[in-house]
Image (cartoon, rainbow, N blue to C red; front, side, top):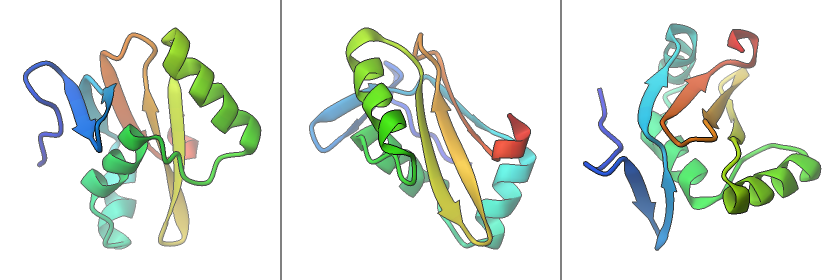
Length: 103
């Protein structure tokens, strides 16, 4: 398994920081990632850097607002024949990789 956080719980990429907290994933999401040959760390990098994948413009705008005000951040990425979501909680205590149907 991977360990994407530093001792401070912050994921640092490209000079930007998003505290991910404890990173967890649902079994279904891990299975889809494995089937699709997708490294979850690559998606966590994108999420942490503000590339939120395939989300509507209104959700991207909300993510920007959420960064400023400390609300939840959500990303959506196509993987194989499905998609995974990555959600970082408002308090930045945890980030979960899951399928939309796991929500």
